[in-house]
Length: 363
Image 1 (tube, rainbow, N blue to C red):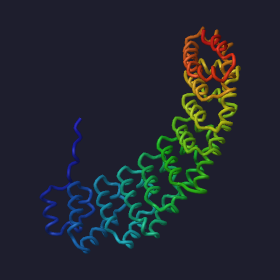
Image 2 (cartoon, rainbow, N blue to C red; image 1 turned 90 degrees about the horizontal axis):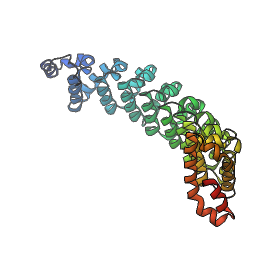
Image 3 (cartoon, one colour; image 1 turned 180 degrees about the horizontal axis):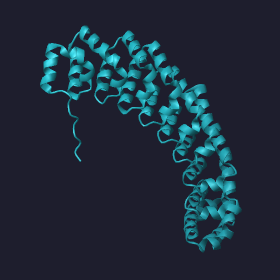
Image 4 (cartoon, one colour; image 1 turned 180 degrees about the vertical axis):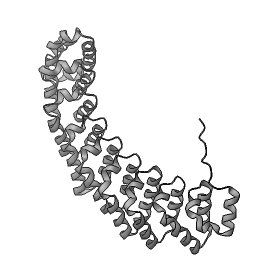
């Protein structure tokens, strides 16, 4: 279906006459909400002098909250922000202060607030005021399809010493934010932007909530992002949170990806601890029969070294008859045997009697 263009509130001839006679000055509010009229107002600002700007600004400020959320009026507001003096920006921020959160949650308003963030960064009093307006609603904004862009713009445009209000709010409600479709991206951007104690605070909060987050469709990506930082202390905390639950976590869609990532990036000591737990004969059969678990076992074997390899192989051998009797089990055996072929050379070089063990396993 072809999208219809919005109908103009004014005829073009009317607008032209109003701009010729300066009658537009007392009708800025209505004209700004008209597509053609809004463009003509912006053009007038470019070619007009200080008196024209002052007249347009005065009328727009009176209706700033509504116009910032208007499909067309928001563009005029952005234009005015770019051209405003520090004092005029103070007036605009004061007029919209109590509504900035609601404006940020609006599709058109979010664009206007992002522009406001860009221009107030050089006006400390306005920046402080704007941060104060958004401070109490950071979590709400991070989870909103429009508001999250406002938070991202704060991280991109405001000086680093003004980011603390975002970091504190996100860390305090990390499970809520990181397990949200939009919030999970904000958490990652926060990690990128944070330094020193702020970064430590964020990563610590994620590690403490990691057991919950790794089982979440969005939270698991946040934990994987932290693992990708290759921070030994953080990685070890995440592995510790999973310890004792690896069998269950390896059989879940989202957490199994994190288990595999940990196997790849953990320290040798933590990796050995994980492989030992995964090779526990009491649960290994379940893993090999599971659509996700058998890939975790495969990853473990690909990464394992002696004596871990021998321990896994020895644990699998008595399970093979029962695995071959079930459909999913047969798939697990096939995957497992494929993995074995990848470590044959290693075993032949490093493990006495490996040929006998391999023959028993793959025949």
